[in-house]
Length: 474
Image (cartoon, rainbow, N blue to C red; front, side, top):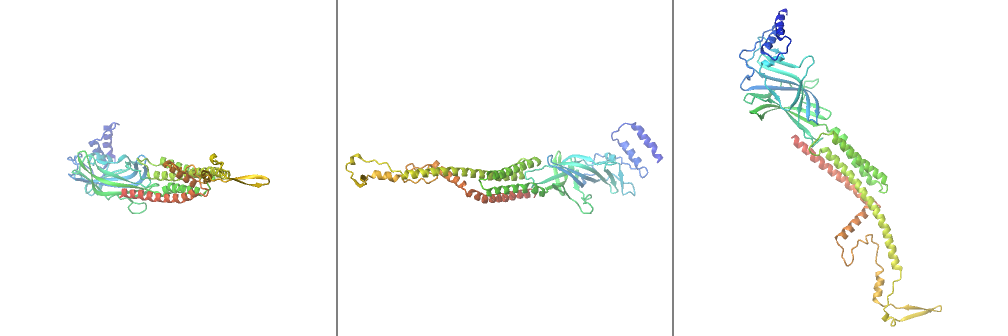
């Protein structure tokens, strides 16, 4: 080992404490010192690290997903802990005899040709390190160069949250070259780094998060990226994010459905108990509004109304309509009481008109010709008139007009025939009287219609959104 001291001192003397840029001679000297006790590795003099090994070099890519650190929906990013392995064959290099492989210093990669790997969706990449960086550069006896890196990467994933929380997000992670075209370099997947589960030898390609199930799939078909000077070969890793619907069903869908069902209980409360029925409906309505605000704040943004927002808005409308139905009932009851008093007054007026003696209008020309008869009663003479005037009889008959109808004033006149507004007013009056009936006719009708409408809404809602989610996945 003492024989290594002079070369090392020479290297540090040349450095003189300064920081050097990558230098071929310096790296070669360090590599020879490193392997001095084994074999001195020399790069061929004709080696050019700027030229690919062959005309159509195949680069194999392997990815081992260690952990899915997180999914940021607001930034549309996914963070992964991965072990990335890239290998290719370089016939210009060789391994010393009787060696299956040799490990080279990581800095030695600057002396070799390496593919200009480009990850399209990559945002950030940080190489992991404990005592030293998790990197490896190895040359095998079959002249295969292998580069392995342990890193934490963050990739960009374009997401669409219109179907939230029924959405399934699909992302593509493309590995390609940004300089070499398909004529120079091809990228393919390698099976040297399969996903392994914990404690077993089964391949692992699925990870469960609190809100997501993340699935990885290597797409081994040929993918091409067209940009720059031509077509570039691409190895594509497909990432699918499926949501865990159980939490959303228990936290949002089930409570909102129960609120709607509770609002139907107001139809069974006597309309005259205003505080109890009003508190039930208003509290339910405010709870749904608060739930909608919370879900809208905590959910990711979308260009349109999200699936869960449509549900909560619809539930709020159902409760609001139940509240409006109660307002109509209260107005009908008040209108009915007013008509009861008015109808009693009309009946009393009609009875008085029928009992009062009609005014007599006698023709003076017939006064002398009208026979007067009488009978003595207690010494008094009581005359009796014999009325034979037709006009007088008609006056007597008109005093017996019926006034029992509650819509007396809205009835069309005998000579006018009525108009459209009068008929509409009549229909409205009858409708209000129906709503204000004391036996709760409108509440009975609403108790049948509201559950039926909510059931139809559920069928349409789930059929539409589930079919759309399935269509996007396939």
